[in-house]
Length: 388
Ligand SMILES: *Cc1c(COP(=O)(O)O)cnc(C)c1O
Image 1 (spheres, rainbow, N blue to C red):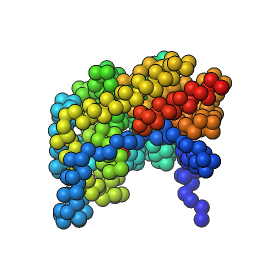
Image 2: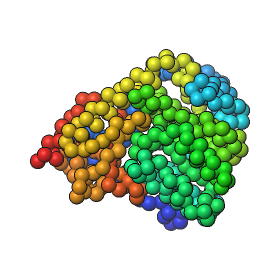
Image 3: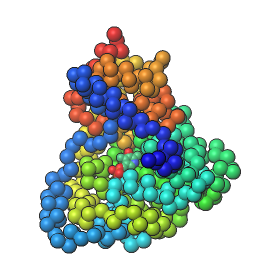
Image 4: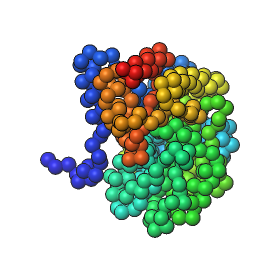
């Protein structure tokens, strides 16, 4: 049976191609070191696991959860935003639980984008923004993220007629895949731009807590008046090593939270309340230094990889956020040919930058979510291969 035509709009899932190559390398007996996937390798904190174990036994949680999320979790999010960002949120109107932030990011397009509407997307960027824009029949207007501009989009370059017909601007800082960060001043300009053109500003803050060298990432909601035009997506996945638990949240514009909720209540029935209780535990009771310890792990790995690559001819700065490194491929390679060669000859798997958009061509991404030992081994293999 023929699938819906909208599926034809989605480019082939390139990560699946890459995984085929990985399987083939494994089959040839290669010891593959996968630096391609950003998924924390260190377990969820013990106290969160224990709280989950107790919560599972509560029969009240065995029934359908509240659509918008448990009141306790939404209140914990509001309190965390107040302490962390000095942002005041009404837990009843400005906070919504998500089944991982990816779920909310995907659904926000369905709440705002009609056939033919423009969506302004970072290129390179997290692929979900693009695929859901296309599924909704929206038109992608890519905003190239280039090194010369600190991997920040040039909003002034968006033609007026595009801006007038755009419904969403997506931003993501600290950024995946470029590891760039943005300051509050950039967010201020983005809020002004969205206000001027009546665009919903969506900010993906999944890496807000993964930062280094004293840098503290802002929330877009710290901008005066941002709540009128902005919704921010955040997640317990990265700061608390909870990617498997599927717990995130959307905060900001009450209108946007409401409209997202209309799609969600007609699609899913919310996250298991026990998972949200575990999330309350993570947000309220984590010893202050848990996230700091995680950042220290990633900082150490970042230094290890940057220093190793710089010894063999790269010239990378140490990024201030996210657990990625974004590096140019050596002369003579494309993103795909470099990643394929590394995998074939060294067993080291990196993501080709072209997977994240046209402007990602010429780069590759390394994820720091594998042990120091394996990272060091990967760097040794790359060095030996490039010297040969
Ligand atoms: C990991 C990641 C997310 C979200 O993850 P969830 O586990 O769905 O909360 C969102 N955006 C970016 C850019 C990410 O890298």
